[in-house]
Image (cartoon, one colour):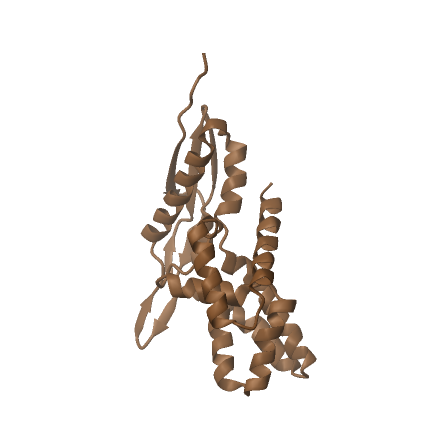
Length: 238
């Protein structure tokens, strides 16, 4: 007779640790607990860490705002339910950790660092070393896509076009991923997770976006670049 085991989980504030700042408010870090076959694992919420970053806090015209803990918990619950349902016949805590590490990742976040590095090299090559350092350091506190959008207003057209076009060959596909995500999500939960990406409807909408806003770029190459990042994330998760 085959035994079946129930998977249970919860999110909770880990009051055994020091409080941390969550957009100006002190709180205990959000953790996830998963129990299966009388064994339990605990780990820090990926989304708590992601949405704690300064760039997710907006202050405009005296108004301030950012993600709420409730929004983060909801996102965690959706992800965990998906992983459990997907793997229930062969479920194990080790498998859960691998799946969580993969499906939780925000594609915009994981490609952003490489795009910042690309801009640093680009402006160094243009003989603008001080500006290159400013972009490299300052972009970590702002949404990089918004920084590039401001560059469109500040730069002459040939320089801006070269920056964008070269990025499709020398940088991760951050620009199309973030631009697409921004059109489909509402502030402040601006992310495009692997879980969301693997929905065929999302891929089709992304393809339409690239063809509309980057008509001179080979769509097949963009999709291949995204797939390379997915392969990289899958290897990291193992």
